[in-house]
Image 1 (cartoon, one colour):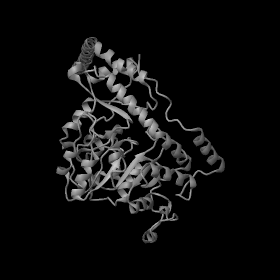
Image 2 (cartoon, helix red, strand yellow):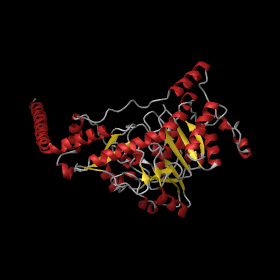
Image 3 (tube, helix red, strand yellow):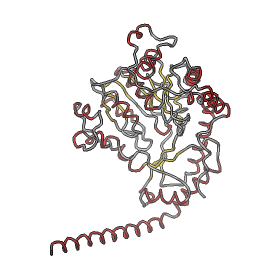
Image 4 (cartoon, helix red, strand yellow):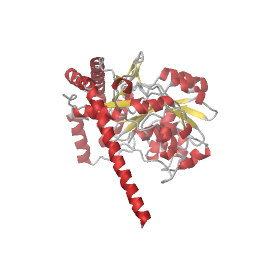
Amino acid sequence: MGGPARPPYPRFSPSAVREVARLLRQGETVALGRTSRTLAKAERAISRYHGGRHVLGLNSGHAALLCALMGLEIGPGDEVITTPFTWGASISCILHVGAIPVFVDVDPVSGLMDARKIEPAITRRTKAILPVHLFGQPADMPAINRIARRHRLFVIEDGSQAHGATIHGKVVGNWSDAAGFSCMGGKLLATSEAGYLVTPHEDVFWKAAMMCQHYGRSAEPGFPEAFKPCVDSLVFTFRLSPLIAALFPSQIRRLPRQIAARQGNADRFREAMRPCEFIEFPKLKKGHLSSYHMLTTNFRPDKAGVRRETVQKALAAEGVSVFPYVPAPITRWRRLQWKDYHGPVPFWLPNLERAGTDYAAAKLPNCDFKVEYSLEMGWNYYRPDPKGMKRMAAAFLKVQDHLDELRAWEEREDRKRKDDENVVVGAARRAADAYRRR
């Protein structure tokens, strides 16, 4: 049975491959800004996709988020409200500028930031809100922006998993003061290792460029005269290689068609999964369209009567891979716990101590719930595949039909594990008794 065969990913057009080969033959392997025609072409293509916003090509999505914060001059002493259910780069960018992440709870099924939790977390030190469009699902940007306007806060979108997701027809990344995107080879807009910053504010673009690229791109047209006395080489090196930049134009042209296929496949799969009672899908908010970097669900143990890990193994035996993406709420990760930390000391830990953070004590019940029951699926199904979606749903339904057998198997495994533990404990006791008799 099994799921659909995933087509090779990412794929590049013959013209993009020829252009990379040309650059290699000519030794054009470094771009210091838009003086490189290849980089300029890539940034123009991305800008058109984002409705003419300013675009800064970078070497990773993490660099893009870090540059968004630096371009908005967020730093030590500032607080940034964000989510505890995400990939770590959404949080480490805040730590790396010396600011303090403030975590609010999430929706228990989608895992997205719950906008209703934001206002109680705002203090006089709050400078920005950083929502994450996780798995390709757009966060509730209209609600988040209303809160930001009331409190005069910046908004920074993490769109690294959500190229092509839209809210009322407007793409994510265009809802904020700045947004960061990852374009590594596993993402929706896939290259190799790359990212980009997008912003409607020209000064944010230039401030970010001054912090992360060679001489702040001061040789480019439009560089502010007032900034020129401050230009130097005290920068992070987040340059985008022209070898990777050359891949962007054709990948962007393909993106709308691929997103439509991902969405169509997800719709077909969800429809075929209607009889499956032990899997719950997020409700689709009106006007919000996911681009499906992954497909997230919640496991229903009350319907299955077995553990999540048992269902994972059963589905794997049918050729379908499901997994929990976030291992634990970020508030419990070891390197954020200054009160009781033993290990290599990250440079942000003293900042968290001075701020008096106590993340381990945070009450985030919905995040806890999502971590405990979440099951994700990789969704690089960028070609229409109705038959493959039905086969994959059939694997879930087959597992559902054999839940009684899985319960019996689980009970046998539990008994065996307990017997093995008793053998180990008994041997340890006998060894201790023998030692005492010596």
